[in-house]
Amino acid sequence: MIGWIIGAVVVLLLIYVVAVYNRFVILKNGIESNFKQIQVALKKRLDLITQAVQAVKGEMKFENKTMTEIARLRSQNIDSMSPQQLKEADALTGKFLSGFRVQIENYPNLKSNEGVQRILQNIKDLEEEISRHRYVYNNTVQEFNTKVQMFPTNIIAGIFGFGKQKYLKFEDEEKLQEAPNVDLSF
Picture (tube, rainbow, N blue to C red):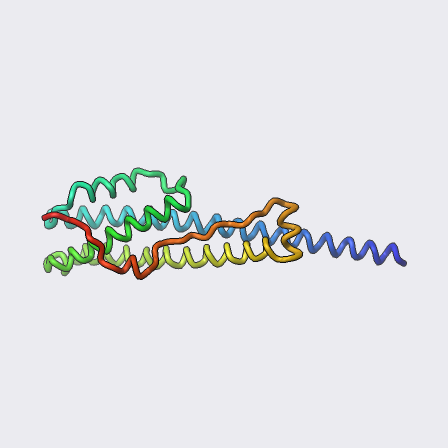
């Protein structure tokens, strides 16, 4: 009888370990998937920025430094960026877009141009998508890190080598909303 009880406890413990391990794998894959989705959205945003600049470049003259920076970002492989590099690319494009929107306001014919407005709306939609992906990413990291730190799941995390994940920390939304000094010399 005691043998059956010990066997049942071992089986239940094994089932628990497998379930916790599988949850760690699911969370880790979710973190990686959300990070990739953020990368894809940032690529799309850079493409849309390039389209927006092309659409208005006849009307507006851009500072060479601004155009060089956008070209540099587009040429980088976003897929291989670290979270810190991704944060920097996001901040730079966010600041450019804020300044770009302010400059568009100074050109009534561009402000009313349907093509430009469509591109700007697409960029706005992408920014909302990026924000949602960041939110899901950080929530998944929070759940993963909580499991890594809590008993008894921390034991299983240690056995299988699961360690804490880093949050994606981007500029405060308030800072991104501020109109930065962007020189788009005319």
